[in-house]
Amino acid sequence: MAEAFLPEVVLDGVAVNAETVEQEILFDYAHCLATPAIYPPTSRIEKFDPLDVSGDCVLRFGMLEGDARVTAARCVYDPQSAFDPKPFSANGSSADVLAVVGNRREILALGCATEVREAASCLLSGGADVVVAKLGAEGADVFTKRGVERVLPRASEEVFSLGSGDVFAAVFAARWMIHGDEPLEAASLASAAVSSYAELRALPVPETEDLRGRSECVRWKGGLVYLAGPFFTIGQRWLIDEARVGLQQLGMKVFSPAHDVGPGPARKVAQADREGLERSDVVFAVLDGLDSGTLFEVGYARAREKPVYALAQRVSAGDLKMLEGTGCRVFDDLVTAIHKVAWRA
Image 1 (cartoon, rainbow, N blue to C red):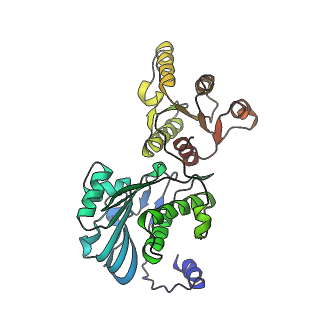
Image 2: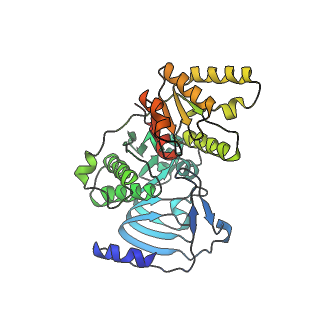
Image 3: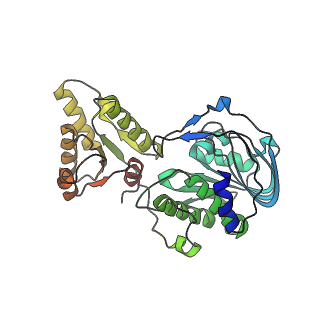
């Protein structure tokens, strides 16, 4: 990894002091919203002594194989742990001015709370000057001693979220620590940078002015999502489970016949499913296999003028004509499709 990385940063004029380790850690994702399988298991990962880092401006990431003990004038701390985020000062780190950047789960864990606002308040009381809580499709909340402000998400044609947390933290750190932007402006530019990265899967991110005008913010809309799709095989049930979890992770309420109705006689199941469709505001449909029940649910929803977002990875263009022709939005990537539901206008 270092052999590929070092020449790139040297070309950009970046001085690197690398610490070499023999151990390799693999993060295996079934898809971008999945919790990764980690190899070797965390209990078997060798722990190294902390790296001592000092500087005027430091961006510190959490690590599985070790830690960084920071002394800084200004520091941005991203714990980067889905399981056990560590408090910034737990290893003796200190900063004159500190910003904590994390996703919802990390901020809740660090603040020992069940609500983001309460967790952020706890972190601010404990020494942080800024707390940025990334809320997925809802955007991000920026907390300071003055209060809280919302950064709305930026739309992208495709969504690839692996590495997006690194991009957000890096751009926020550069804008807030180096360029002196206010936290809200820095977080807004970081959000735009993530939108570019998620769509292009490429670095570096565009210039600042291009980020400001890259795409309009989209507003989060609540409501109930009806999850349509076959669940007769292990593979089908796994995909429905993953889609449901993904929708819920982005803050959506989900009615799933597989989970909320289950098997039963045709008349009972059909009635319960139809009632769920009537209550729902949008339909998310898994089309692979062209299951007759799923196609009925899609047609029923469109007849009621409910928006339909669909995942079709193994369906021919000819079989999609009626769906696309009646306004259904069809995607071939699960994570993109789920985000589009969350961003619907």
